[in-house]
Image (tube, one colour):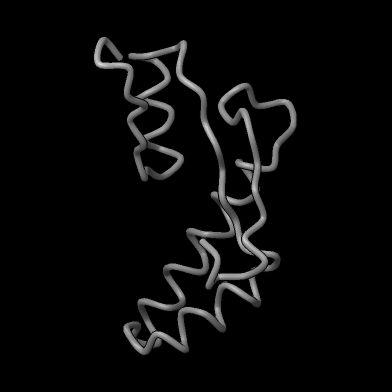
Length: 88
C-alpha cells in the first residue's frame, strides 16, 4: 500500500474469512460462473479432473457460491459473473 500498488489475491471463501479478520479494510470481489452447470462443463473441457475430483469440486463450488451470493454477508463486496471465460 505504501508503494501505491493494489495487491490481488486469489483465495477461496475460507481464506477470505481469515483475510478479512486480519485486514478488515480490504475490498473483496467474488467471481462466479453463470451456473454450476457451466462450471462443470468448463472443468470437464480442461480435462484435468477425475470423476471423483470433479464431484468434490462441484460440491465445494455449490457451497462457496451459496455463501458468496448471500446478501446478508459482509464478506463479499462485489460479485462478478464470468459469462465469457476467454475474457477473464
